[in-house]
Length: 159
Image 1 (cartoon, one colour):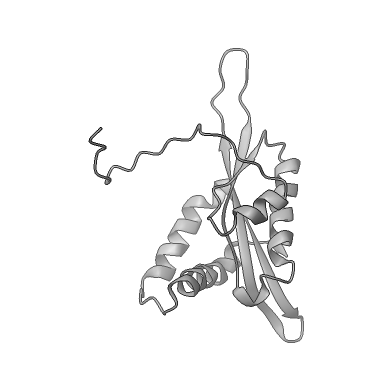
Image 2 (cartoon, helix red, strand yellow):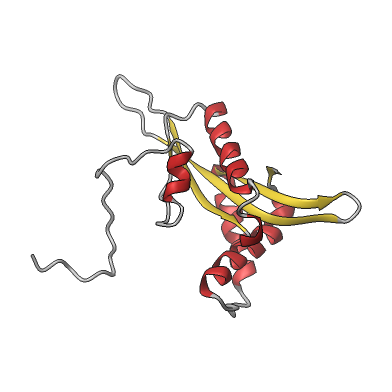
């Protein structure tokens, strides 16, 4: 497990593709995806930290098997408070063949340790239905009903 850098963009894009294809159960034809991912990486890199889990040995080389990232959000200062920082965990993924080998927990521990080092006021995430119990076991708790989302493409509520 290590912090990813520019040399890992191709591996991270491959993991992102594998994430979707595992869920879709089929190959997704998108020849421009890797270039779009690399551009996204360059845009997001200043405010995100990525970790990459790998298996292998120095002689055989390393194979990426999972990743996670934390985006840093800096709160606006206000009179009487200089704000602070929070982190949002995102894009956690481990190849299915390694999901029961402690890799997800190791990736999450790296993100939690990072949050402590950066002195974040909190670490947030939006789990999928299938991952919520994993995060609860790791100490995350529901944050209440304070988050509202606007989907500009959704049909308006007639009520």
